[in-house]
Image (cartoon, rainbow, N blue to C red; front, side):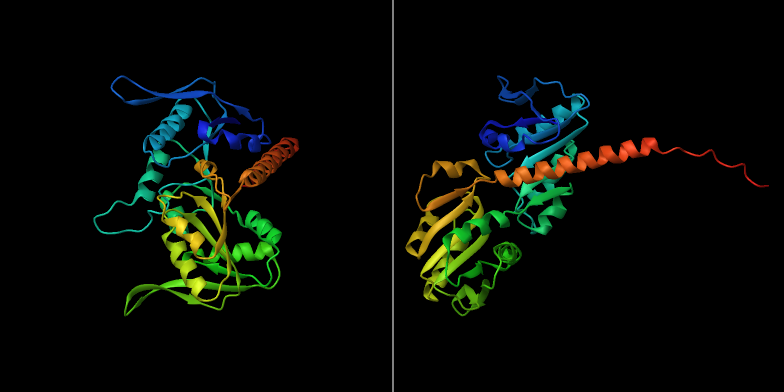
Length: 321
């Protein structure tokens, strides 16, 4: 398998070394004088499985460069083009609204037309997004990584909280990996006389663990933490898979009893924050797990193929007339 990493994701390449017959491929992206984007592949890929590691997140040129690379690999004879997108951008645009674009479906169509066979991602936003992309998606869960870090905290009687109904499933996955008896609560947005408010369902202890997939501006988590603080939570620990950290509103979290935010490095810019209140968790172990899984599959396919070659095919009997 020939791996083509975009430069901002090269820190994850070392976790893919166990992929079957893996080696690095070379490519470059640039612009013509008229500013049109182009991609050039400098590695022979004929009859090879290829894997692109990178992002389609803004700026928008990253999406086009990604698609051009995939299309070029297929044009140059690649037998299959798979992609690892640790954070699958545009997946949140999965709701149909009159007059508005449905980006998840549009980006999925672009990927299919660029000959992308499958997507490997981490903590996909929703099942609806998966159906809209219309390409096989292998969704790697960070639950085991989160549970490992939560255990290190040695919290007494922690309550696990889903900040909205959409986060319930991933919260339960973390609890399963954490083990033991824990309390669970969740937030739900409801219309009240004062407008739309987040209502807490369940009781919380003084130690609270909040699980979510994305921290963008932090609006949902700020509202959640405000309610939890009012309900008596003294120590709040937030675990998110994808840290975008847009703007500065999310910094209010540290005034609402949030002691630390744990975030994976699915988006590399998390390393530029350099805040002691933010702990980065590598997604490397998930990629290693995927590599070993793929290796086993390839090994089994070869075994079946060898066994099939050994089978002697009997001559068909003459039909009885």
